[in-house]
Length: 503
Ligand SMILES: Cc1cc2nc3c(=O)[nH]c(=O)nc-3n(C[C@H](O)[C@H](O)[C@H](O)COP(=O)(O)OP(=O)(O)OC[C@H]3O[C@@H](n4cnc5c(N)ncnc54)[C@H](O)[C@@H]3O)c2cc1C
Image (cartoon, protein in one colour):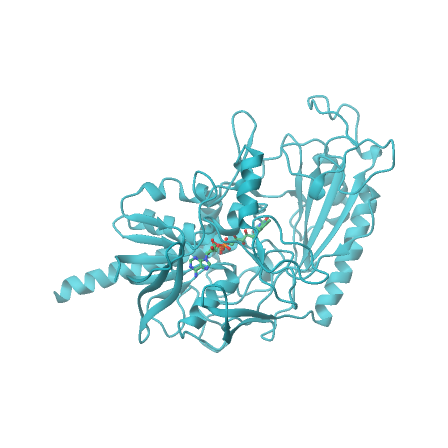
C-alpha cells in the first residue's frame, strides 16, 4: 500500500472538488486524497481556461489535450478541452481529462431544477439548502452581465412570448462567473470551488494518476489501485471510504472494472437534445441611447466558432416548466456566427444565439456499457454506447424547433433555420449511476450516493441525477455531492466513535 487516507475521491471536476471541499470544511481532520488522471492547465490547478489571459498559452494547453478518436463520419469535431468517446450512437459524446475536468471549459450556466426535474428521493428542504451551498461554492450570480447592452430588449421580447403565471419568468441566466472590480469576468472552474483546499495539510491532489480499480473486501471498499501515468508504476492506496466522481462514462467504467455491477449500472443514460438558431435583433427593439455608455464599435466581422462570450454578451434564460419540455439559453454575441449581407453592421449584443435543451424520455436501453473483450488506452474495459431517440423525444425536438424559430422571428431577422445538433453535443450526460429510494434494480446508489450493497463506496456527478431534466446539470450534481460529503463525514465520525468505544 502506498499511502493511507480517510477518503479517496476519484476525479477533480466540479463534483470531485466540491466533495473534497465539503469534507474538509465539515471534518478538517480527515485525510482526503483526490486522484486525477489529467494534468493542471495553468495556475491555479483547476482554474477555468477562459481566465488564462495569454491566448497563445491557452491555445497551446488546449491543443495538447486534443487527442482522441477524432470526429466520426458526419460528426463535428470535439469542443476545445474535450475528446470524443468515439461512439456512433452518440457521435458527440465527449470527456475531459485535466485537473478540473469539464469544469475547466464549461459555459457555467447554473439554473436550478424545478417541478419534475427535482429528484423525488431527496427531502426538498435538504436539497434546497444543498443547492444554496452549491451556488456559494460555484459563485453563481445573475448579475455577471448587467452591463451587457440590449439584454433588456431580448428579455422583453422573450418574456412576452413565454412568460405565464405558473412559470418562472424569462430573465438573466444564473451563471458561475465573478465580476472583478475592473469589470473583468472570472469564470468559475473547480479552482474557485477549492479555494485554499489544496494548501490544507490534510488534503492532497495527486495528478497524472489514474484509478484502475476500487479494492473491495466483500461490500467494503478498502482502497484504490492506481497507476502513475508518467511512469506506469502501479500501487494501492488504502481508504476508509471511496467517492468516484469521474464523469458519466468513466464512473460506471471504474465500477464495472472493479466487479461492482448493479443491474442499472450504465443504464438510463440521457442528455439534452440541443437545438440552435441565431437571430439579428431588430432595430425596433433597440431603443435610442441604449448604447450610450458602451464604447464599442459596430462590426461586420464573423466571429470564429460562433461568437465569443464577453462582458457585453448577455446570457438570458427561458426557464423550463413541466408544460414546456425544454429550456432556453440565449446568448448575445459580439459578432455574427454566419456571414452577413455586405454592408450590414451590427451593434454589440445585437446578434442573438438561441440554444434550446430538451428533456429526453428515460429508458434503461439507453446505456453506456463496457466491453470486456477490448480495452481502452489504460487497460480498462472499452466504453460502448447504445442510445436512441424515442417518438416522444422526436416530438419534443420538433416542438423546440418550432419554438426557437418563433423566438428568432420575434427577435428580428433569423440567421438561417434552427438545426438539431448531433447526439452528445449538450455535454450534459446523466443517469448512468442514478440514485433511487430503494435497491429495486433501477438505480445504482441511494440518495446519499452510496452504491447499493456496499458500506462505503459512493458515486457523484451528473450520472447520479435520476430524473429526466432540461436544465444544465452541474449545479444539481454539485449539490448532491455536498450531501454525499456530509454523509461520508458523518459515517466516518460514527465509525471512529464505535472503534473508540470498542478499543
Ligand atoms: C464546453 C462545455 C460547456 C459546458 N457548459 C455547461 C453549462 O453551461 N452548465 C452546466 O451545468 N454544465 C456545462 N457543461 C458540463 C459540465 O462541465 C459538467 O457537468 C461538469 O464538469 C461535471 O462535473 P464532474 O466533476 O462530475 O465531471 P468532470 O468535470 O467531467 O470531471 C471528471 C474528472 O474525472 C477524471 N477521471 C476520470 N476517470 C478517472 C480515473 N479513472 N482516475 C482518475 N481520474 C479520472 C477526469 O480526468 C476528469 O477530470 C459544459 C461542459 C463543456 C465541456
